[in-house]
Length: 100
Image (tube, rainbow, N blue to C red):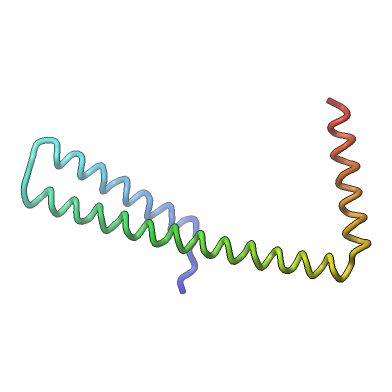
C-alpha cells in the first residue's frame, strides 16, 4: 500500500478545489458537454481525495495503536520509572498552574 503523505493529501485537495472552481466557472454561462467533462473531473478528484484521506486516517490510527502498545510495554517493563516520570510531570504542571 502506498504511504500517504501530507504533501500528497494537499495536492489532492488542491486538485479538488481547482476542479470545483472550474465547475463553477463552467456552469455560470454554459451547458452541455463541457460541463459534463468538468463535473466528471471534479467527481474523480473528490473520490481520489476521499480515498487518500481515509488511507491517511487508517495509517494514523494504526501508528497510534502501535505507539500505545509500545508505551504500554515500556510501562509494564519499568513501572517505577513510569511512576517517577508521571510524578515529575505532575509536579511541573502543578508549579506552572500555581503561578497563574
